[in-house]
Amino acid sequence: MIPIDVKAWRLFSFALLAGAAGAAALADEAKTRTGKEALGDYSTDAPGVRRKITTADLATPYDTPSANNHPHVVRRPEGAWPKAPAGFEVTEFATGLREPRVIVRAPNGDLFVAESGGNRLRVLRDSDGDGKPELSEVFATGLERPFGIAFFPPGPEPTHVYVGNTGSVVRFPYKNGDVKATGPAEKIVPNIPTGREQVGGGGHWTRDLEFSPDGRTLYVSVGSRSNVSDDSSENRRADILAFDPDGKNERVFAWGIRNPVGLATHPVTKEIWTSVNERDGLGDHLVPDYITHVQEGGFYGWPWYYVGPNEDPRHAGKHPELKDKVIVPDVLVQSHSASLDLAFYDGDQFPAEFRNDLFAAEHGSWNRARRTGYKVVRVPFKDNKATGEYEDFLVGFVTPEGNVWGRPVGVAVAKDGSLMVTDDGSGTVWKVTYAGKK
Image: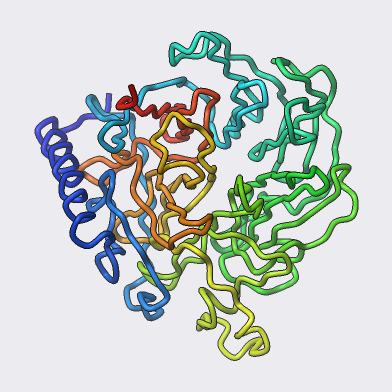
């Protein structure tokens, strides 16, 4: 067992509860935390705390030293549990998984989980609705750090499930209810740059997948190899690539996106959205991670600029012709939060105001003296557009000492409308249900 100061943990839990009440009061008075108050760290997190970071809040490069503060992952302490807003209940759906990452709901309601550490794809099924899967089967093995999962064609009767390996996209034959692959992996895109090439703080290996609603386009997220290099090793990287469903006709959908991890489609506008890990090495408060809709052909700045026409000092004077072409993202997130997967809420179990809002998992990073991330946030929308704010939704994964017992990665909406969250720190899938609904 990992030793823990029980008194300190109880005080920390009380502080979080007090923080939730304080957040509610803050929401009444000021609606959001802005400016320096919006930056904060894990000690300021609590369910309901809302932040809005704008371009006016950007720090100056090297305002603080570049930290080397890797998280120390510990076993979940006794009494520790994820905390959601009042009215929501968090339960343990499944545990003991090998680095669970992306989770996706199949058309029939089964939950598919990429176990990246086990190089396999798992199916979880809760037919009786008791909050525990009575079926947990390995659908496919022999994968290579799988991450993204997508069913094709979009709609109620898929014929295949696609999987994003780190260096390829493969697909398996699939029909509703299958819990084992009925055929071998077919390699659709054979040669995506892989995450095995580690160079100076990069080598991003996650490959998320998303089909356009009409099924004609497969989007694949490919992160940079490095932190901020612009040499030839970055070819076909820091992009969202697009393919035909058979893997042919590769094109660049958007570029200059350092690490576009998660992909999701807005239920109404049909725009594709992504969550992005920005660069390191410029200090605690640069560069903000972000969540944004993606413009076809859009340029998002990496590696020469960030958040609009802000020049990275490590590339001073390069590509001035691109300065005014950099798109400012919709939602800026605390720097070094490591925003990973995301999903739009399309259920009806949560209160009505959550409908079509976005949930994003913040995995947490190493490049900040005081931790940020290690939580799930809600991005509110108005008239199908992000307001620019985000709200802490699921927190409590950091101990009073600053160690970490949980790291959220994947988010999905289950068929009953609950929110499913994967946590690769504890190997768990958490289920968040609105208990206040009668």
